Image 1 (cartoon, rainbow, N blue to C red):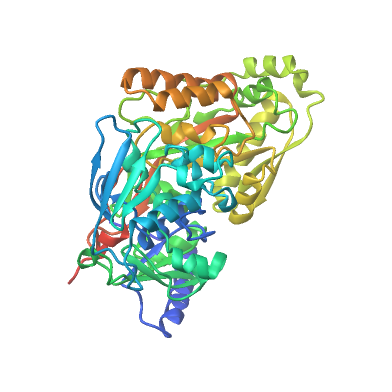
Image 2: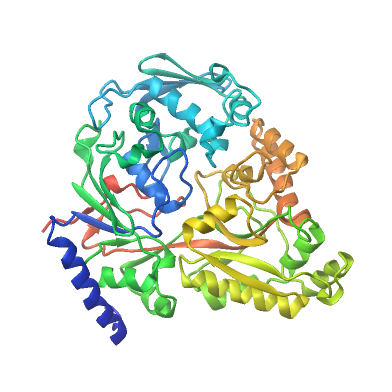
Length: 532
């Protein structure tokens, strides 16, 4: 039985109904409506960074592999099958001969070469370019040390065969091929329209859906791509993805039937969380996600590891998950979430105020005296971000005597500030792209654009490189653990706060095709309303 809806919520639902009916007068409603979180910054697979952006791009563009809807494991996509050399460093991908762009042109191996080199090209400024550093000469080209793209380990041996050469055996390479970053994009449109290619119509799409329209702060409408090789298995003809960072608005639209599915725990009103979690249409599941704090180590006094560790040791993480998040999250000591096969996360820094005060005094700030006022950056995507910031502000003042101001920015501006190191400390999160510890750890290598801390450690880089060249799984785990200990215990450019618990809501009697998995990936192609 559903919980009784408060009066304020019933009134808001009426407003949501009027708004949704106003939209419906001009055109037919979509077959499926999903609340997708923040307004996407981009739909370009090569440069996007946000989860909401990626969900749309994964439907519009396809890679060599794609995600199994139930398990999120990599399965054949535009590559029908592949051969792997005995030493695991050479892949020959055989593309489907019936693969077409939504505009009718064939999709070729050359399109993949173009798409991958575009991501690596320094001028593209792709924050996920590091996902292609596993290619032979991929890192050298991506960092500008090598100018000749023909020396990168990807080439078309014919129109339907893509040869990929890796530096070392990479056990998760097929998982990488499913990521939006490695998905194929239309060279013909990008070369013609440049940065405006996604604003032109029609946009050539390679995935299950093509873009009908993108109305900023209103919706993205997708339509089944009839030329997609697997189009017969696309269950919903049209899909609307609505942007919303307001938990109350998301719930209102869902309660009135104006939305069928709501992704993300941030879109559940905190004040109703205890009640809503008891409802059968609110679904929780474990997944690979970490909420953490970044330090900008290029700014004083955060260039001192003692200062960073002092601030970390003054945080009561149990208090944050018990008082604020309250959705089944687990306090995080290490950075890599539990549940990754063949990897045990090492311990990081716990809650130890006396040690925190000692370290701060050793750094020259006894009792917080002389410590400069600083800012903690968070975004405005949910009220919870500010609540956590206020809690941290209180802990640091009470335990260390330091003062922090809270700086709130709208999502896109927040991402830009983080990427430009325009912050002192900032809230961050990372959702695993594949089921391996490397997806969490390689982002803090010196040359990885997702680092965004200014921290560089030759030891860390070397351990990651050695680990990913290691065929002995136990030795690989030990190397990764060494790196993670350096990251969260010894130098602490980041402070893990908690591991996520997934939550989304939909009525299983009305919507089918959504399966919980540790990557929180749910291909829209298989999601549909129950007929009758």
